[in-house]
Image 1 (cartoon, rainbow, N blue to C red):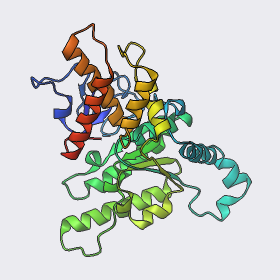
Image 2 (image 1 turned 180 degrees about the vertical axis):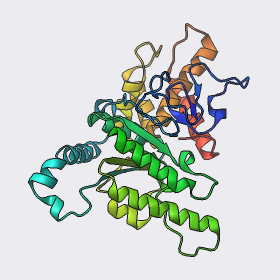
Image 3 (image 1 turned 90 degrees about the horizontal axis):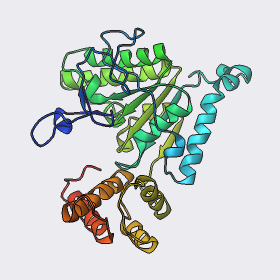
Image 4 (image 1 turned 135 degrees about the vertical axis):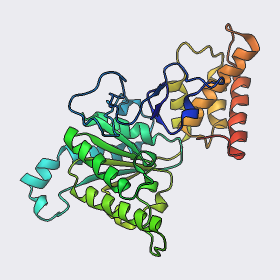
Length: 320
């Protein structure tokens, strides 16, 4: 498994290599079966099974770190309250007698790429005071018959053992519609995996989080089992202003007026938070290339950076 400088799991080795083909400083390659704390990449935890492909992550992001519309924040707060009051609702108030699901807590975050779904999942786990297990379909899919369902079961079992929040990123790959016309063994395997996912979700008493860019691909059976669907939209003008103010470090050598910042914010309409971060980085790169270490990042640098990410997006080169 591959981890970048932010200790975030990435899919391919190429994503952590420099221009010379060497692993960048701060990146890690961890063989499956070696269990590390994601935030430390050091000693094994004795509580872990030696052969599990999953790792515990200690959430660093908080709800205060998020820049979200008020309605989205209210939805998150409401669902967090339900989780925290679960025992009272289902035991003291008797709801466990009528809700045969046992009050499963599955939350779905959906919206365009780069809108903060993964960061929000981390912040939710942090707010609950729990560690998180981040699962990507590439980590549980197997070419061997029966292995993918086994990996799904292991993910839920590992989360139960450690009382951790289970987070499925790019969940449409896991919660997709079951196939009605099964003609090949691979089609049958897909349906088996999704049936196992349904069973595990039904029996899991912990918190499960899903994130997707393509919620329309979900099977309706999974949609019914999710207690809250939270839309993560592209940032509004007010949110974009907050993002620029929050993501530009105090050491950043900017030389722009408040009016110019407002111009930048307006010009950034339709850009996600992840792309706005790219704009900030690229603008500084333009200034550094032009003037060297003593540079000042000016309005024109931001305009060039915004134009660059828009052009890249049009040609499908920008990963948002």
